[in-house]
Length: 197
Image 1 (cartoon, rainbow, N blue to C red):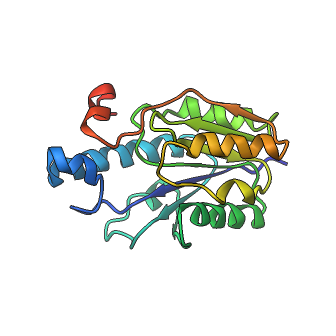
Image 2: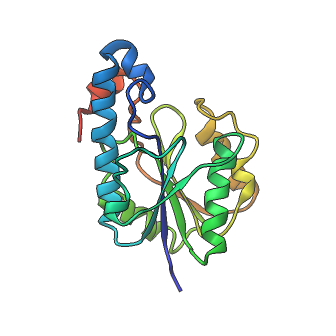
């Protein structure tokens, strides 16, 4: 029986700790404002799905934590790199009886409930679903069953992550669907392409 789980990986909205590349050109205050808007947009779109959902913080929980009020259980990431942190979150979800499981970040003004539903739909007929980002990474990854190999041996935060991940899926004979490419907001140039949610 389907028991989907949405994982959101995020950072606490703290001045000087988020969107540092944006802050380099727009200032720390504006970068924090943009991040806070993106975070709000992400967790609201996720909440509209009506599935179990978890918020995973890369750092300490903020004093005014925004996700629990929208039905997210709140956790802290653990692991040596992004791959290990994601794998642990997926492993915990599968161990608790969830499937499929998919993960998103918080840098996506183009993210929508409809796109998240498309990802869930894809997992009815595919082993995996992946949403490529304009920077060569991915903004969404979904799995029907554990696949630890795709979280290992990656050059995280580089333009090769999407290609490396799909190459792994192919090598492992897993089927997958690719979603539309979205712009991941890292720089002022990215922001100018899409605006804010």
